[in-house]
Image 1 (cartoon, rainbow, N blue to C red):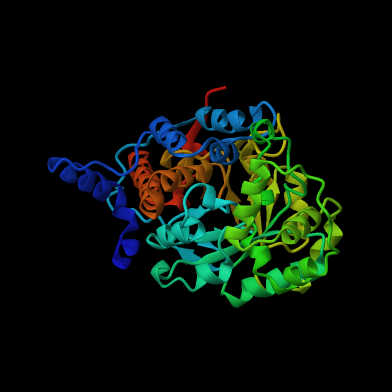
Image 2: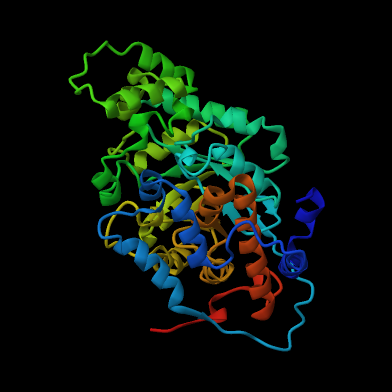
Length: 419
């Protein structure tokens, strides 16, 4: 998509329909399925079993992931008629900047499981629409490589921080994020340790042990020093074909066993408290958003602590089984924040109508992941771009058909709960 198409995002619904139908005259069809169930199934067929378990799985019985989807389905759109919606504007104001759409590409780790172009592919795809890409701390490609990728265009970058147990490493990651021109820092608080994920456990597969998803670490000077100073250890693992394949995979990625062990040692930080926020504020000039907020009291306290934005998320149901749906938490958090800070929302977003629902319930912007992950698994960068295009196209049409011209016009009156 050309840069001028970013300026025409408001017309993307009708334009996308026209492009698809006109291409169909020549027998061409979209690269990826448009229907959500078909998109999911096509990605499942393309991905290996380990990759599918990690990218599509959730915690426990996966009740939280199911609740995320069910919460959207409980909110029905109430269309209004005889309103002039011919000129629609999809743009939003967020952290002092105007973005052409309300979407963000959510941070997703270990994207090499979906496609070899990984973080580069989504950054390029999102840039086509002016959508910020939130670079994962568990990336497959270092942030500097993504930032200097000339094919990426002018798309904005944010950085997600998993707060390591090593403060010097955290400081180094913050300096690097500022150096690449990141526009915001997303401190993820809902993953101080991994949740109970049966799909991965049944397969005994954790990608980090295989050297995947740790490129932000292995490219960091502080981390490399930590790994280099690690005492040599003898392994008591049995020499099996699987163990040999793991070692060969590490060598192919340029990762050492010491780096893997160092990562496993420093990743988790379960002892964080509200008092620690001042520490990170002193070490970065970037706007800070707290990701993983579900309780209104936490949102209220974050705003009172001077945090720049709230990110409502339950990690797509990957952390706590039986937790509240993210969409159910959203209006409670919005009431607590009362307009004092922007709210980003994620978890369970499948379609453009889901984006509309989240905005109507109080979100300033909506971060999406699974649609473009599945698109990427099917067709790489082009698949990710098509998935984002389809989300925007449906949102644009739903916005107009419901009687609204911009995200700013959406409020709870646009929806009716079915309960």
